[in-house]
Image (cartoon, rainbow, N blue to C red; front, side, top):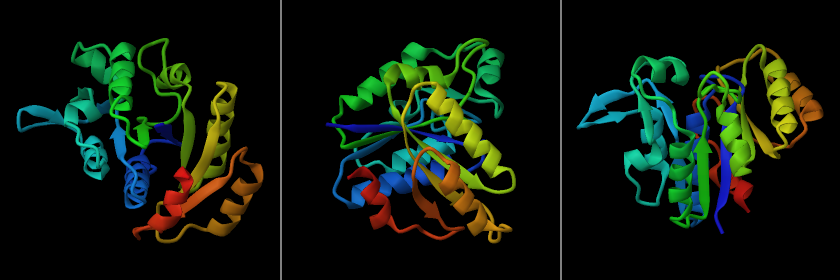
Length: 221
Protein backbone atom coordinates (compact mmCIF):
# COMPACT_ATOMS: atom_id res chain seq x y z
CA UNK A 1 0.00 0.00 0.00
CA UNK A 2 1.34 3.39 -0.97
CA UNK A 3 2.18 5.85 1.80
CA UNK A 4 1.09 9.16 0.30
CA UNK A 5 1.96 12.44 2.00
CA UNK A 6 1.64 16.12 1.19
CA UNK A 7 4.66 18.36 1.81
CA UNK A 8 3.93 22.01 2.54
CA UNK A 9 5.98 24.84 3.95
CA UNK A 10 5.68 27.82 6.25
CA UNK A 11 6.28 30.09 3.25
CA UNK A 12 7.84 30.10 -0.19
CA UNK A 13 11.61 29.56 -0.42
CA UNK A 14 11.86 27.49 2.76
CA UNK A 15 13.29 24.40 1.05
CA UNK A 16 10.22 22.25 0.43
CA UNK A 17 11.68 20.77 -2.74
CA UNK A 18 15.09 20.10 -1.21
CA UNK A 19 13.52 18.40 1.80
CA UNK A 20 11.10 16.43 -0.39
CA UNK A 21 13.98 15.23 -2.57
CA UNK A 22 15.98 14.20 0.50
CA UNK A 23 12.97 12.29 1.83
CA UNK A 24 12.56 10.48 -1.48
CA UNK A 25 16.27 9.61 -1.62
CA UNK A 26 16.19 8.38 1.96
CA UNK A 27 13.21 6.11 1.31
CA UNK A 28 14.84 4.84 -1.89
CA UNK A 29 18.00 3.93 0.05
CA UNK A 30 15.73 1.92 2.32
CA UNK A 31 14.71 -0.14 -0.74
CA UNK A 32 11.36 1.56 -1.22
CA UNK A 33 9.81 2.50 -4.56
CA UNK A 34 9.36 6.27 -4.45
CA UNK A 35 7.86 8.97 -6.64
CA UNK A 36 7.47 12.72 -6.31
CA UNK A 37 4.57 14.85 -7.54
CA UNK A 38 4.57 18.62 -8.09
CA UNK A 39 1.11 19.19 -9.55
CA UNK A 40 1.38 22.97 -9.95
CA UNK A 41 4.58 24.88 -10.71
CA UNK A 42 5.14 28.46 -11.84
CA UNK A 43 8.38 29.87 -13.15
CA UNK A 44 8.92 27.28 -15.88
CA UNK A 45 11.27 27.52 -18.87
CA UNK A 46 10.72 26.12 -22.35
CA UNK A 47 13.42 23.52 -22.94
CA UNK A 48 13.56 20.39 -25.11
CA UNK A 49 10.03 20.91 -26.33
CA UNK A 50 8.32 21.23 -22.96
CA UNK A 51 7.88 23.53 -20.00
CA UNK A 52 10.39 22.60 -17.32
CA UNK A 53 10.45 23.57 -13.66
CA UNK A 54 13.56 23.01 -11.57
CA UNK A 55 11.57 21.81 -8.55
CA UNK A 56 9.73 19.22 -10.64
CA UNK A 57 13.00 18.11 -12.20
CA UNK A 58 14.51 17.64 -8.73
CA UNK A 59 11.59 15.47 -7.64
CA UNK A 60 11.78 13.42 -10.82
CA UNK A 61 15.52 12.89 -10.31
CA UNK A 62 14.91 11.73 -6.73
CA UNK A 63 12.22 9.24 -7.80
CA UNK A 64 13.15 5.66 -8.58
CA UNK A 65 9.81 4.92 -10.23
CA UNK A 66 10.21 5.78 -13.91
CA UNK A 67 8.08 8.82 -14.68
CA UNK A 68 8.00 11.62 -17.24
CA UNK A 69 8.22 15.28 -16.33
CA UNK A 70 4.60 15.74 -17.38
CA UNK A 71 3.55 13.03 -14.93
CA UNK A 72 5.46 14.73 -12.13
CA UNK A 73 4.29 18.24 -13.06
CA UNK A 74 1.07 18.29 -15.12
CA UNK A 75 0.42 22.03 -14.66
CA UNK A 76 3.52 23.99 -15.66
CA UNK A 77 3.22 27.77 -15.92
CA UNK A 78 5.81 30.15 -17.33
CA UNK A 79 5.41 33.33 -15.22
CA UNK A 80 7.37 33.17 -11.96
CA UNK A 81 4.52 34.54 -9.85
CA UNK A 82 1.62 33.18 -7.81
CA UNK A 83 0.25 30.24 -9.83
CA UNK A 84 -3.36 31.43 -10.03
CA UNK A 85 -2.18 34.80 -11.37
CA UNK A 86 0.24 33.09 -13.75
CA UNK A 87 -2.59 30.86 -14.97
CA UNK A 88 -4.76 33.90 -15.63
CA UNK A 89 -1.99 35.62 -17.60
CA UNK A 90 -1.49 32.61 -19.89
CA UNK A 91 -5.23 31.89 -20.05
CA UNK A 92 -4.85 28.40 -18.58
CA UNK A 93 -7.11 27.92 -15.53
CA UNK A 94 -5.71 25.56 -12.91
CA UNK A 95 -7.84 22.41 -13.00
CA UNK A 96 -8.41 20.52 -9.76
CA UNK A 97 -9.49 17.57 -11.88
CA UNK A 98 -6.06 17.51 -13.55
CA UNK A 99 -4.32 17.64 -10.16
CA UNK A 100 -6.41 14.79 -8.79
CA UNK A 101 -6.09 12.70 -11.95
CA UNK A 102 -2.32 13.13 -11.90
CA UNK A 103 -2.22 12.05 -8.27
CA UNK A 104 -4.36 8.99 -8.96
CA UNK A 105 -2.20 8.10 -11.95
CA UNK A 106 0.94 8.08 -9.79
CA UNK A 107 -0.89 6.25 -7.02
CA UNK A 108 -1.70 3.52 -9.54
CA UNK A 109 2.03 3.04 -10.09
CA UNK A 110 2.03 1.34 -6.68
CA UNK A 111 5.07 3.07 -5.25
CA UNK A 112 5.78 2.56 -1.58
CA UNK A 113 6.05 6.33 -1.03
CA UNK A 114 4.37 9.14 -2.96
CA UNK A 115 5.23 12.69 -1.94
CA UNK A 116 3.05 15.46 -3.32
CA UNK A 117 4.71 18.85 -2.92
CA UNK A 118 2.78 22.06 -2.75
CA UNK A 119 3.76 25.50 -4.00
CA UNK A 120 4.28 28.41 -1.66
CA UNK A 121 2.58 27.89 1.69
CA UNK A 122 -0.47 25.98 2.87
CA UNK A 123 -3.19 28.36 1.62
CA UNK A 124 -2.07 28.57 -2.00
CA UNK A 125 -4.86 29.97 -4.21
CA UNK A 126 -5.84 28.00 -7.30
CA UNK A 127 -8.52 30.54 -8.16
CA UNK A 128 -10.39 33.31 -6.39
CA UNK A 129 -12.27 30.86 -4.19
CA UNK A 130 -10.34 27.56 -4.15
CA UNK A 131 -7.00 26.60 -2.65
CA UNK A 132 -4.54 23.76 -3.10
CA UNK A 133 -5.29 22.89 0.52
CA UNK A 134 -8.87 22.10 -0.59
CA UNK A 135 -7.47 19.44 -2.94
CA UNK A 136 -5.33 18.01 -0.15
CA UNK A 137 -8.47 17.83 2.02
CA UNK A 138 -10.35 16.02 -0.76
CA UNK A 139 -7.48 13.50 -1.04
CA UNK A 140 -7.33 13.05 2.77
CA UNK A 141 -3.53 13.28 2.83
CA UNK A 142 -1.39 13.47 5.93
CA UNK A 143 0.90 16.49 5.91
CA UNK A 144 4.59 17.08 6.51
CA UNK A 145 5.35 20.73 7.30
CA UNK A 146 8.74 22.15 6.35
CA UNK A 147 9.66 24.97 8.72
CA UNK A 148 12.24 27.39 7.33
CA UNK A 149 14.36 28.29 10.33
CA UNK A 150 14.61 32.07 10.19
CA UNK A 151 13.23 35.10 11.98
CA UNK A 152 9.44 34.78 12.04
CA UNK A 153 9.40 30.99 11.82
CA UNK A 154 7.59 30.52 15.14
CA UNK A 155 4.56 32.54 14.04
CA UNK A 156 4.55 31.05 10.54
CA UNK A 157 4.87 27.47 11.79
CA UNK A 158 2.21 27.75 14.47
CA UNK A 159 -0.29 29.51 12.21
CA UNK A 160 0.28 27.00 9.40
CA UNK A 161 -0.15 24.06 11.77
CA UNK A 162 -3.30 25.68 13.13
CA UNK A 163 -4.72 26.02 9.63
CA UNK A 164 -3.90 22.42 8.70
CA UNK A 165 -5.58 21.13 11.85
CA UNK A 166 -8.58 23.42 11.29
CA UNK A 167 -8.93 21.82 7.85
CA UNK A 168 -9.33 18.47 9.59
CA UNK A 169 -6.04 16.97 8.41
CA UNK A 170 -3.35 15.13 10.31
CA UNK A 171 0.14 16.60 10.57
CA UNK A 172 2.52 13.66 10.48
CA UNK A 173 5.27 15.95 11.72
CA UNK A 174 7.43 18.93 10.92
CA UNK A 175 10.97 19.22 9.59
CA UNK A 176 13.24 22.09 10.53
CA UNK A 177 15.21 23.28 7.52
CA UNK A 178 18.21 25.42 8.44
CA UNK A 179 18.35 28.29 5.93
CA UNK A 180 21.49 30.12 7.02
CA UNK A 181 24.88 29.17 8.44
CA UNK A 182 23.98 30.90 11.69
CA UNK A 183 20.54 31.69 13.05
CA UNK A 184 20.38 33.57 16.36
CA UNK A 185 18.99 31.30 19.07
CA UNK A 186 18.40 28.37 16.70
CA UNK A 187 18.24 25.82 19.51
CA UNK A 188 15.89 28.01 21.51
CA UNK A 189 13.58 28.36 18.51
CA UNK A 190 13.61 24.60 17.97
CA UNK A 191 12.80 24.03 21.64
CA UNK A 192 9.89 26.46 21.45
CA UNK A 193 8.48 24.74 18.39
CA UNK A 194 8.86 21.32 19.98
CA UNK A 195 6.84 22.55 22.93
CA UNK A 196 4.10 24.35 20.97
CA UNK A 197 3.65 22.45 17.71
CA UNK A 198 0.82 19.87 17.63
CA UNK A 199 3.05 17.29 15.96
CA UNK A 200 6.56 15.88 16.45
CA UNK A 201 9.76 17.18 14.90
CA UNK A 202 10.75 14.52 12.38
CA UNK A 203 14.19 15.87 11.51
CA UNK A 204 16.46 18.88 11.32
CA UNK A 205 18.14 19.51 7.98
CA UNK A 206 21.58 21.12 8.49
CA UNK A 207 22.64 24.12 6.45
CA UNK A 208 24.20 23.00 3.14
CA UNK A 209 25.01 19.55 4.51
CA UNK A 210 23.46 16.26 3.46
CA UNK A 211 21.12 15.07 6.21
CA UNK A 212 21.25 11.63 7.78
CA UNK A 213 19.30 9.73 5.12
CA UNK A 214 18.99 6.60 7.26
CA UNK A 215 17.31 8.67 9.96
CA UNK A 216 15.01 10.32 7.42
CA UNK A 217 14.00 6.89 6.10
CA UNK A 218 12.61 6.07 9.55
CA UNK A 219 9.82 8.56 8.83
CA UNK A 220 8.29 6.05 6.42
CA UNK A 221 8.39 3.01 8.74
